[in-house]
Amino acid sequence: MRLFIWFFALLLGSQTAVWAFKGMPEKELSRDARAPAEAPPPAPMVMKPLPELKGVVSWRTLAEVTPVRQRDKFVPQFSSSIVALDKKEVRLQGFMMPLDMGDRQKRFLLVAMPPTCAFCLPGGPDQLVEVQAKVPIKYGFEPIVLSGRFVVLRDDPMGLYYRLTDAVAITQ
Image (tube, rainbow, N blue to C red):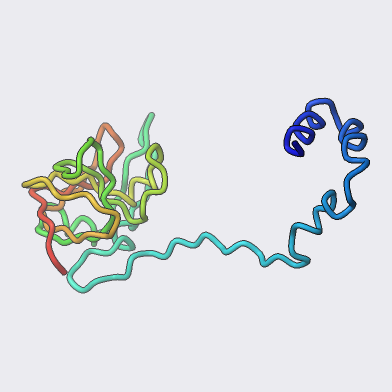
C-alpha cells in the first residue's frame, strides 16, 4: 500500500507527497534513517594493465605509434621497434573480443583491457590487434597468449594498426 501511495504522490507532485505521508511516522520519511551516517566512498574503477610477460610483445610497445595527418586522413607513424616486428613470429597477450557468435572464434580482436561493453572498443587502434587464427580458439574472459605472424598495417581501410595471422593459443 505504501508503494502505491508513494508512486501516486510522485505522479501528482511534491505537495501531494507531503499530504499523503502526513500521518506516517517521522522515521519512515527520513532518508537518514535508512542510510548510514557516513557511507564509505565508492571504490575506484581501476583497470590494471596486464603484467608484462617474458617473450611477449607488450602493449606499451604497441602504443609507440603516432597518427600523422596526410591529406584528408590520418595514417600511423610507427616506432622503429614496431617496424622491426613486421612479418615476424611474435607472442601477444590480451583479452579476446569476439566478432562472431559462438564459443569458438577464428577471427576476433585481441585487446589490451577486458571488454566491458559489447558495442564499444576498449581502447584506440594501438590497443587492439585483429587476429586470424589457424583453428578456432575457445572464447573466455581470461587473458590469453597467442603466437602468430605479426603484420603492421600502414593504411588499413578499417583503421586497424596490427594483425596477427596464423595465430594459435599457447599455454604460458
